[in-house]
Amino acid sequence: MPARKGPMCGVSLLAVLGFAWSALPLQGADTRVAAEDAQRVETVSRISPSVVAVVTGGGSGVLISADGYALTNFHVVAGQGPALRCGLPDGNLYHAVLVGLDRIGDVALIKLLPRKPEQKFPFAVLGNSDLVKVGDWSLALGNPFMLATDFTPTVTFGMVSGVKRYQYPERGMFEYTDCIQSDTSINPGNSGGPLFNLKGELIGINGRGSFDKRGRVNSGVGYAISINQIKNFLGHLKAGLLVDHASLGAVVASSSEEEGARPRVLVSGLIPSDAERRGLQLGDELVRFGGRSVTTVNQFKNVLGLYPKGWRVPLAIRRERESGGADTRQMLVRLMGYERQEPEAPQPPKPVPGRPGQPMPPAAPKPSADSPALKLFEAKAGYANWHFNKMERDRLLANLKVRSDFSAKTGDWVMRSKAYLGEKGREGSAVFRWAAGTGATPDRMMALIDGIDFTLEPLKTDLSAQSLRDPPGSGGLLSALYQVRQLFQKGGSGFVGDTSHGGMEPYYPPQEKDPEDWSVVRIDTEVLRVALGGVESKLFFQPGAEGYLLVGLEATLDRDEDPCEIHFGDYRPVDGKLLPFRIQISHAGRPYCRLEVQSWDLK
Image (cartoon, rainbow, N blue to C red; front, side):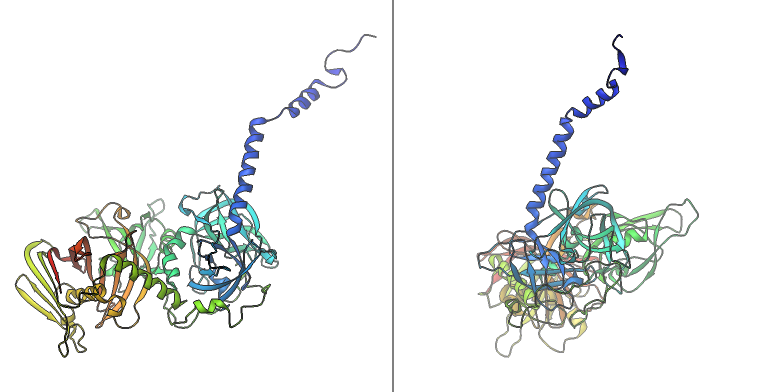
């Protein structure tokens, strides 16, 4: 019988081809997958040493600096006291101290104490959460269910499911704005731990999640506080502050026009605020806020939650004209506070369903009363840790003295200048004299502005409100300039009460016309808060490699009024140090005068 030919012979041709195909190496795909696997493993190995197991409180954290600063959630450390114990993947347990608190944003800054004086901590690199996109991969590291008894973090891997999410606050706290949603598994104990991208950059701090109410089982919906939001508050947290978030001073609502109309966000209510003083009116449409387009109330709340109280943020509005059409204008708005600062220490929140990382029984005893961390804590009303505020304040003042230390100039100071007055810049002259008191003679601040004399005894206790505001229209220029001399000549000791560090704020030097993009002219500054003679002031300092420069001052006589604003520029040498030779003064949004300094005479 002849042998069979074709597909009926033994094994089918399709089977043979299938076997052959499956045996062929998919070299390109295999190589790529292997490379991605290796890269992911390398990333996890590189970032794991920075992950903190917060033993006191039962949560997680992440180191962000070599000197031991670490981020976690407020709800992890709340109620635990200022001294904490934390473990690192090196297997060691460390003492740690509470530094700053943001209870609205659910963030806390702590500092681990080194076991040896020269020890440097491994830390995570801060990423840019604005670049995170839906579909990106992410890594969550932490200590869920206190599994990391050796402090080695648990790692989970998943996808970014949403960005710029808004999660409503719970009892006035835990408002998650502009947050990152991911299906990267987080469970109780992950709270406060890091969310990384695949480059190993820190993009968020895990905090909230949607859980099965009966079993507290992860449902694949977790929320991380964006690292860009935290960056805005980091200067405040390092200064030991109880952080307050911002509000605009206005109620906004979505327009209820006919179907298909352009969505709009309109001002429906106003309270006395800087926004109102800048000209915001009922019925105005919010177009852009903080550089972002605004078309829904949700978008507005998302952006508003990114900023601390007191920051100035650009706002663009559209206003209908009675004659038809509309005008668009920009304004820089000082943001109000979200909550009233309480003098007592924050109380621990009650457990709330749907929020991960409720405090769990600690795996180690709480620190004793002689914990070394307590040496770095000082209680003070309105502060999370006054010790760190003093430390940041003294560092700032030391950096100022590098370039502008005039402590030896204890006599009279005289500044002569050309003056360009008012909005039209009418040319004139101005001479300012800081007359140092001797014996029974008090300090005096004198000015001769375009032929008109003004004199103020700034330390006199019964000064009238009008004299403190002199010259008229300046908002208190004499009072403010006296504080400048106190700063340059006496430092922090030139003021009454507690001179304090105010964190970081954006500063916008005066412009001839509003720029299209305010971020182009923005300067990131450190803030010093001072008070003297009934005048409270914020001083803005621009950091530099060779010391700090005073770039701005806001002197406030009444918190419901606009401050006297002074901008300092064109620094030049005077007696071996630096003083400003261009000074611009404005009040209530209008220029008072611009001074082109001709000479400084310091005795």
